Length: 344
Ligand code: WQD
View (cartoon, rainbow, N blue to C red):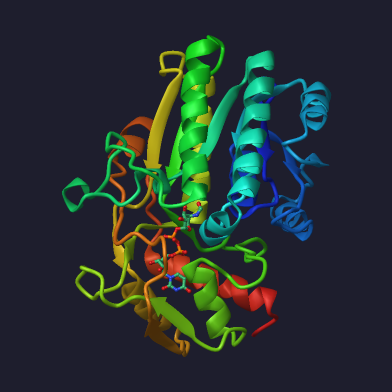
C-alpha cells in the first residue's frame, strides 16, 4: 500500500523538524513548507542527515493562498496537514499583536480551506497557554479545564484558531481535526543534528540556559523568586521535543486509521511532572557538570505561576507517553548547543 503523505507547515521549525523525522521513521511520506521567517534552511540539511534522504520541500508562506493551492495541486496525495507555522514569541506578540493575529490566523484559514476542498485532516499545534493561569485545584490540568482569557495575543491566537477549527468541523462534514496542546518543549534530537534555534536573544528558558553555559550569555536571570511555589520560582511541564514529535504521529495515525474517532478531539501533551525553574537549573548543572552563573530578578510580565499536564487522555487514546528521563533531555540540549558552537 502506498504511504500516506503528510504536509508539515513550519517544516524548518523546532517542533516541525523533529516531527518530520518521526513521521518518516513511522513510514509516512512528507512534504514540508516554510518561509524561513523564524528558521534556517540548514535545518533541512540536518533532517536529511538523520534520514539519509531529503524530504520534498517548498519555500513559501502559508498565508499566501496561491502558494497553498499550488502545493495541494502538486502533492495531490496529501492525507493530513500538521500545522506548526505560526509566530510564537509571547513577549513579541504583546508588542506586535497585529502581526500575530494576521499571520497565525491567515495561515490557519488557508490550511482549513485547502483541507476542506481536498477532504484531508488537520493536526493543529496548540498550546497550554489556552488555559491561562490554572486554578491550583485544577492542577494537573486536563483537557476539560476551562480556557481562561489568554495572557497574551500569542495565546489568544491559539484560542481563536481552536475556535475556528471547532466551527469548521461543524460546518464541513469531511473535515477531521486534532488539537494538540503542548506544554514546554525542550531538548534536541539525540544526533545533535537538529535542535532549537532561537533567533537573537532566546525568550525561552532552556536555550537561554544552554547559551549561558556556552558563554554566549553572561548570566541566566531567573524571573522571580517570590511566587507562591515551594522554592518561589515558576513551575512548568517540560516535555522532550522528540516525545512531542511522536505524539503527532500518533494523532495522524488515529485520524487516518480509526474510523470511529470523533471528527475533532483535543489532547494535552505534557509529562504530568511540574518542575520549577530552579529545579531545572540545578538538574542542568548536575547532569552536564557545567558552570551556570545565574541570579534572581523581577518577575516577567505575562508569566503564569504554575501549570503542568494531566497526560492520561493522550496515554489512553493515542497510546502515547512522554517518558524520556529529564537528565537525558537536558543532556541532549547541551550536546546540541555544543555542536552549534563547536564546543568540544
Ligand atoms: C519558562 C519559565 C520564565 C527565560 C512559552 C509559551 C508557550 C510555549 C513555550 C510555544 C518561566 C522562566 C525564562 C529566562 C526565566 N511556546 N524564564 N529566565 O513562558 O512557560 O511558555 O514558551 O509553544 O506557549 O507561553 O516558557 O521558557 O519562556 O519560560 O526565568 O531567561 O522560565 O519566567 O517561568 P513559557 P519559557
